[in-house]
Image (cartoon, rainbow, N blue to C red; front, side, top):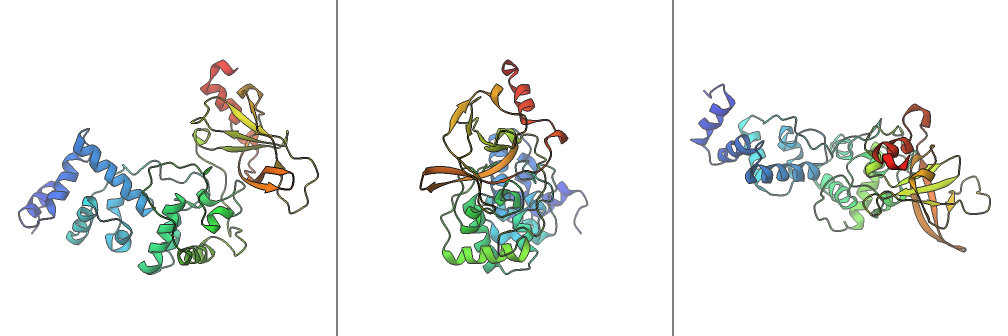
Amino acid sequence: MAPQNIKAWVSHLCTRNKGSPHISKLLQHGHQPSITGDLLRASLQALHVELGISGFPLEQKFARVGFLATECWVKHAWKFMSSSGFTIQSSASDPNLRLRRDNNTFLMESFLSLNLSSDALLPLNRCRLFLKVTTLSDITTGDGNKITNSAWQGVQDPTQPTHCEWPAQSSPPASDWDIWRTALQSTVCLNSRILRSPVGAWNDTNLKDHWIWYFSPSSERLYQYQPQVVPGIWSFYPRAPGRTSRNALMSFIHEISTHPNDVPHDLHPATAKGHDTNSGYTTALTGQEQEPASLRPTLQQEVDLLDPSAT
């Protein structure tokens, strides 16, 4: 009979199994500020990104999602634990892999709910890793109503924020993207890319640190903020001349730099895309968050808190 104490149980396994030293190392070094501890945590973070689901990776059922992971030391430890009937519980799941909008979901969890075979789930995960996305809101327009065209077509969006280190993933074949679109239609959207249930407001207090596009209804301008590229400087795009038809996207032209003092108070997180027109290259608004600005601090107020000299 196995000892009741988990460390004693691991020690008991070490005398009988070759895989148990992996578990012993995880328990001993997983929380330590050491080279081994850093390597283990980095490996666990990479595993979490590769699985694309919520919660601590080693608490997941290996038989359910283990095939999604690349062969590595931590995967073998996880497999051994599952076959031995125990798990390592931890609250140290990657804080970067979380739901940043209301009514949101992890894409792989939605796909897993379809009870698909590994032959279908592996292509879906390849598509997700190529796009560098984890949740539904990562592939949704700013208004939360629609899958972005780039995510639907399998094209990487350079303006899409990334919150973690991603493994190398080559562009999947056309057959994978067919499975991707079919799975999205079976879980979250219609054939027109319209979501069955729109995602809601952002709940990310650090949104300003990584989101790029914002729209001001009062000035009808599209704003861009890239603090990693040009700290403290905003760019805005005036609306293109002419009236927009009912179904056309609002277009903007001529990027102009501006100081944070000149940024309006009614900025809404948005999504945008560039395209060529007869009059030249323009940027089109594809969606903006609809939450009233009065319900939370404005982005300008948050900028002022970060940069008191701007006030």
